[in-house]
Length: 104
Image (cartoon, rainbow, N blue to C red):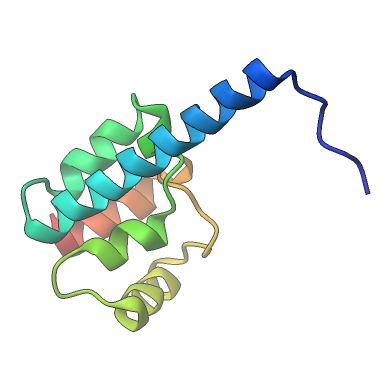
């Protein structure tokens, strides 16, 4: 198994801080979705410009929507033919349109 690249302590610290900031940003985004202060359309638009939002999994975003749980989110993804591992930035035009038709 290949080993991760060797990093200097300073580079490792910067990488850890960047990862922690990305987790905080994703958590804030999911909380905003949960309380309804941001819409799915806004999140999808933001995904094209914001790297952290673009790398967020579609499943996590759907589960954060009000009234959508784990089972409903997975069922919806199967209906629209979105893989469990798909990220927001990787959605196709038709997949985006189908999601917005349901939640837009």
